[in-house]
Image (cartoon, rainbow, N blue to C red; front, side):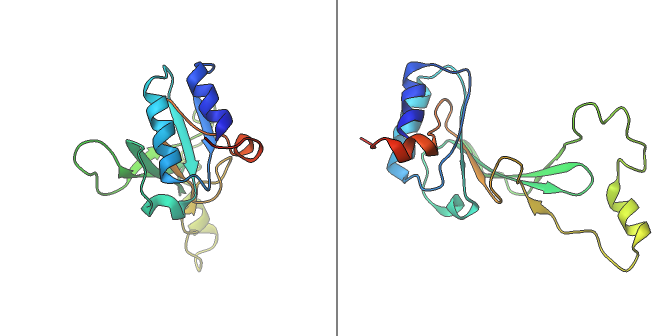
Length: 155
């Protein structure tokens, strides 16, 4: 947390991404205030359980892997009117779009044809570098680092 705050204050990065599983609302608010003065975007990743906690972040989203090369994004909080529903984004990895056959562009049909008794696997939560079910908090310029939080006191 401390390290992230220092990076934001120094303007030492183009963009900042941090995993803060235990950040308290007042810490997030302090980072959000710093982030407003930062030129680059700041993203906080938090556990899915934190989606119902108070947050000063102006934008909060939940991202999940979906079938057929998609990511489902749910807007939890934004400026302006609320956004109900899920936004579906294509997520074919770079370069694969040009080489995938039409059958492989819809893997759920291929899986269903091979195992008709099984239904496609349910959506699973975003997992690559983000812990399962992480919610993203965009602060607009600040993000704290979990490792720095362990080594430095919060003021």
